[in-house]
Image (cartoon, rainbow, N blue to C red):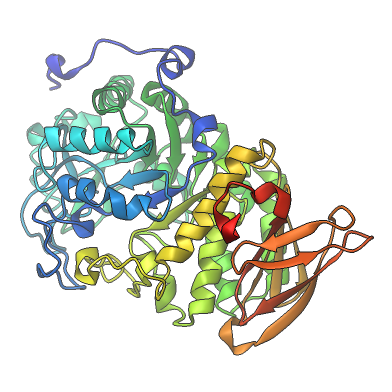
Length: 492
C-alpha cells in the first residue's frame, strides 16, 4: 500500500496557491513558447555529431544541461518561455516499442529521469531561464503509469501509486467512447499504460500533493497536462489549483464546442481545432473561407481563445515541412502560429530549421545534428521577427493581448486576421504566386502603415483603406508605423 511519508501534508485553495506564483494565466497570455523534447534538443557534451537516427526510439543523450547551454539559441528567436518534456523517472530498458526517451512512461513521480540529468541539473535549468526572464513549462503525466507487458505487473514497484487498487481495471481504450477514454488503458500488451483511478479520493490527494511539490520545488511557471481528455473533467480544477500556475491541457478534438469546454476546468488547451483545419487550408486540401469560419467559431465558443495554445507542429504530429517544402508555405504556418490571435504561440523545436519528419519518431529528430544555424536560409530569423513583433505589441498596446481576433477570407486562397491594431494576410498558394493585390480596411484615414515582415510601407486613404501586395505568397502583417517606434523592426 501507499507509503505515508511520500504524502506532502498540505493542500491549499486556489487563491492561496496562486498568490504565491507570478506565472498565472494572465502572465502567460503575452508569452511565446518554444517546445523542447529534452532527449533530442541538446547534449551536455555539446556534440553536434553524436548519432541519433531519425527512426530511433532509444535515448539519444539530450539533457537539461544541454538545454541550458542553448538558451542563447532559443532566446535569439525572442521566445519568452520553454516547455520541456516530463521530468519524472520512467520505466527502463529497450521495450518492443523502444525506450522511454519521450517521458510519457512514468514509474516514479518522486525521482527525476536520470537520463536527462540530476535534480540539481533541472533546478539549474529553471534558474538559468528565470535569470533571462523566461518562463519554464513542465510536461506532467498523471493519467497513467507504464509497465513492460500487461501481465504480472509489479504494482509495488510504482511510486507513489503502489497498489493495483489505485488503478482502473484493465480494458483497452475505445476512443469513440468518452467513458472508455477516461477509464481504460492506453498502450498495448507490450507497453500498457495502466490508467490511474482518478475517482479515488486517496489518489486525488496524492496527485495534488505531487504537482504542488513539483512546481514549488523547482519553481516551474506553468504545466502542460498530458492526456487531459483521458481524465474526467472535474478532476482538473483541484489539480490545477494545487499546481498554482497556468496549466494547458492536451485535449485532442476537432470541434470547437468539445475543445472549448475544457476551459471550464483549466486555463487553456492545445488548439487542435485551429491546427487541424489550418493544416488542411495551408496545404491546399481546404480553403481559407473554411478556415475563417472555423477560427471565428473558436472565438465565439471558447471562454478565452488568447489562453489556448496556438501550434502547427508538436511531438505527436507531422512536421509542416513533411507536408510542403515551399518556404512561403512554411512561413505562412509560422506566421499563423505566432500572430493568429487564437492562443499563446507554441513552436516545436526544429520548426525553425524546417525539420521534415512526418509521424513519430521521425518528427523527433536530434536538433544537434543541424549544428544550430541561426541564418535566414531557414526560419530562425523569421521566428525572431515574428516574436519581436508580438512581444512589442504585447507590451506597447495594452488592449492587444485580450482583443478578440476576427477572420475573413477576401479570396478563397487568402485569410485575413484582425486583432487590435494588427492586420495579417496569409495565402495558401505559396511561392507559385508572384503577387496578390489586396485591400486592408478599417484603418483611420491617411494612416502610415508598415508590413513588419517585409518592411513595405503603405498609407490608408481618406476612407481608411490601404492597398497591400502579397509577394511570392508570403504573409503580410500590417501595423501603424507610429506604434512601431522602439521596436527595432524595420529600423524603427
